[in-house]
Image (tube, rainbow, N blue to C red; front, side):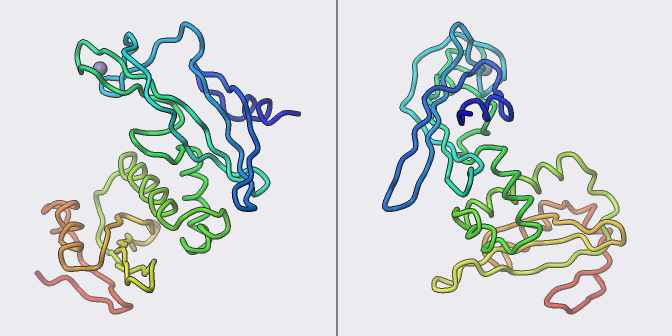
Length: 227
Ligand SMILES: [Zn+2]
């Protein structure tokens, strides 16, 4: 069975077809490159408004990281088309396997985010031969998706933690969890661990929801919110 046949079973993109698949070796590390082509006669969709629009031109080929196969990194190669949209102007097309300018495919981001629940982010990055940044982006995407699809009312208790992801240069992210009974989940991720980072969280949560907070747990110290 060809890799292409497997992809055609598990990951079909309407309006696109898989082209050549190549196995390459870069300094002893194998990777697969899978070409994607627009199906003949298919119209590109505008990234701005999501409507099918006439093509304008084609950009240079881009690489999108997909879920590794047998531990071999997999990349999709695709030359994005630009559309001439009467509403949005000249825009890059929308593709179904990745969002915006992201180079991680959505499927791979969900895959990584799933593993990041079971392993530390660094362990997940090492296990799948990817960068810590990619795991961070994947978790961020999953959190944003979760928040867009769930309500934020009744957040009463939160916990905050810092994750050091680069010891030498001391790089941190701040994570905030909801810690209410039956509602334990990652709420928010921000870069750095400064007061400004944390203010960003409160700003994002909004003044009304902040008023409802009763407990904040930080560095294993539980504090009742008094003001
Ligand atoms: Zn448009």
